[in-house]
Image (tube, rainbow, N blue to C red):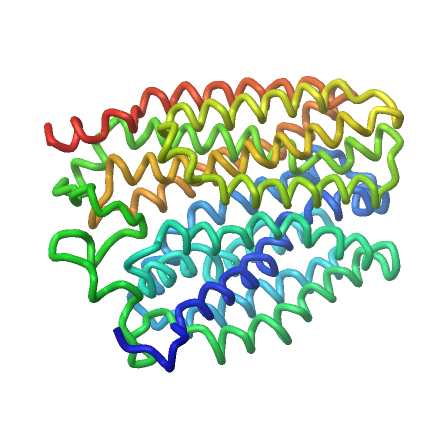
Length: 425
């Protein structure tokens, strides 16, 4: 393979992806940090404020497949700067928001438009373009920026405490324009051919083992010869989509939207509440790194472990009644973060077991769309249930039920039977 000296430039793309994930998704994931000051200033209901995040996740899920397709059709180095500019303008605009619909439009519609066109829907295929071998490792490293984006909220809380929430949005927008935009313009390349290089490991890939692969390095698994129509008619695909929608869209984002405000309601300081959120981000990152467990234990068993950890975490969260029980918050953050981080690579690997081949891209996009559909419900419903009951207990119980149902649907998808299913096809 062609290299520049002894260092392969693809690792620069990995680094750029990590930084990009932190800065791009840190804005969405900081919603719970902005939740309290916006609630205090305007006095809107929690359900109405939460629609901001529900819209954001829903629109993002709809746009993710389109963004990936456009990056392939157009030059990604043109699409991504456009996405960063849109995201920056939407973020800065939130700093001037005065009406609820301002935030719905800016945070709920424009922001996910920008995120989709400069985020993971483009970064993931770029990483697959640069690496033929070690794709599992590379995608895991790239995704860790998503976990660390929750830690970014601690920095944002410092800005809010010092300068106010409106200024914080302006600072975040400035970081996008003056740090991320130059990073993409000068260092990001969608394909190694753009620098006269070949993908990592391309010389070692045998014919039929995925030189045009899908991002999952499974040399022992032959690519599926299913047509796209057959893929879309397979019930297992929709079981996986529903599973991801329930686990992350409803179960995950319902809690993430409200956990900081929940801790503040109990009596904890805003900085402590956000630090618990940051710890969650660190453990999500660790959980993602342990995605290889599904290769040893099997997809279903690993997902069961992830779901059990998340349910234990939510039971701990529900049990918090006063500030002397901070240990329960630590249990919640560590268990929920590790479980959530472990579930994502497991369901994507399980999807690849069944649908590995030239149509895996649409499958991965549909998983994100499912998350978006669930995310349209979760954050809003959590706020609405609080508005009518005065407590988050029923909302967190709903998250437990959603995660349990997600696990059932993943078992119904049966990645363990993938080989037999593919042979039958």
